[in-house]
Length: 282
Image (cartoon, rainbow, N blue to C red; front, side, top):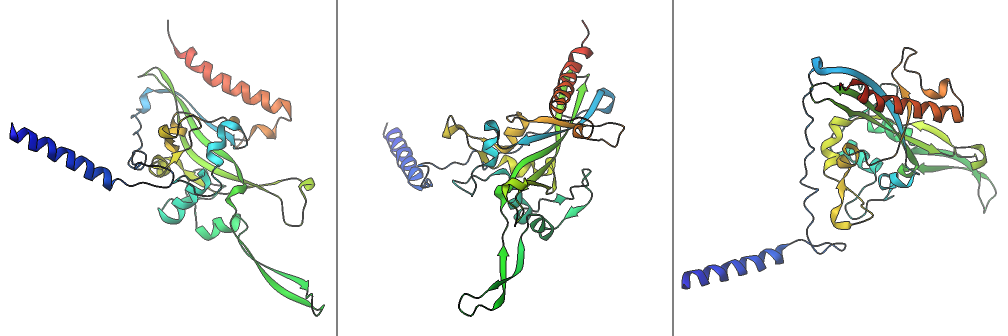
């Protein structure tokens, strides 16, 4: 009996000691380790002989849409959370994540961090302006920093395929490309936004980084999910702007205008979804 009492007392002391050792932050009274220790779920193996249909699809994610805002915010690192572009930049600068040239969606031409910063317009400018005291013209060097908030869209390359072994239509994301929208210095918003493709990221390479960083959940702070969950569970809104075709994989905008572009995008999406039903046998 005494041995049981001593054991219970020991467990209580150890429990209180472990609670005192728990790490707390200004935004949480308990240590949040689930997402930090998460690992991406491995892909199921697919045999070439089982693939009876495949199509490459490019789609655009607009971060201005409400459903996609968790990828745009926070505009600065906050509560161990990063926006998607800040997380990718962190991975490139600190985790060895490779960025590839925008004209190379086969991921063979890597870019340096200097190349990426130049695409963001970072660097120094030399301007001539009058001195307020003397009135003489002087040369002044103005530094320009990286503004990741200008990334408002992403181009996603993915492969759709039908696996006859499981009789399912599956989709695998291959790459992500941030798109920067900005107003050129000296222009006004009336001159229109300029668009610039930044770099390609090979998605399977980035999954480990995406799986260990959480995304804001507007319904429950205790049940946040990771960026890898966001993409794998398709928790985003997008539209198709390109599919593999004989015309050098031309985008939809090259042969349609205005409303016809949206209708063509919807038609391609419906064709892909109907493909799964067409392969079923009853």
